[in-house]
Image (tube, rainbow, N blue to C red; front, top):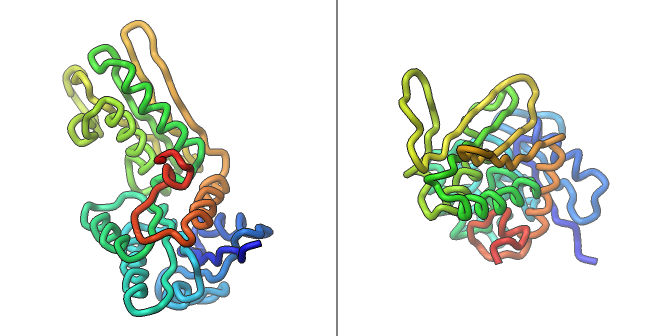
Amino acid sequence: MSQPVKIAVAGALGRMGQAVVQTLDGRTDAIVAARFDRPGVEGEHLVGADAALAAADAVIDFTVPEASALLAEAAAARAVHHAHAPALIIGSTGFTDDQLARIDAAAKKVAIVRSGNYSLGINMLMGLVRQAAAALPAQDWDIEVYEAHHKRKVDAPSGTALMLGEAAAGGRGVGLGQVADRGRDGVTGPRKEGAIGFSVVRGGGIIGEHSVIFAGESESLTLSHSAIDRGLFARGAIAAAVWVRGKPPGLYDMQDVLGFSR
């Protein structure tokens, strides 16, 4: 039996960090090797980021975009100057183009799995959305992506909603940037043919609701997913950490982890 994957948990005091630690409890294929949080935050058995990188085979990071980009750069620098550098599992969302470019550059030196959602169900939904969008012509079917999250979420639309929008756009052979309609207010005029709209709700403690509506003149089709507890995202991230051990440097996603990209 192979040794368990040693995992460092970034943002260990946050909601998702705590969920990852709890989900790792009792597993035999992966263990907590270190926990760390923002610079200067101490206690709770926390270590610094450098010590965490040194102790781990993989780092699971559900923090914020800038922290994730800095962590990727630190891991890449470690790969240059040390014999060992961990892989990264990044679940943050709301990145700028510059932050994504920095992560892409780091992936030339370390293996990085980055996904807007680590749910198996969501990744299955993406495939179904792509197929439906390819089969239902834009002149007859409008596409709307609906998402709802808790009031503490700071980015909108969610990373998952954008992934679903990209799947729909990909099914129609266009780029999401060409057809996305991310905000409506006032007199907006009729809907543009082929537009992919986004509707966003923020409130209470909603963990995550996502639906993609295909609306025709006489019928509609809705494909949806509901998150019941944060453990499902933690389990997906841990599966990614187990999968990525031993993989060469590169940028991967959950479609790779689940074998959908083969």
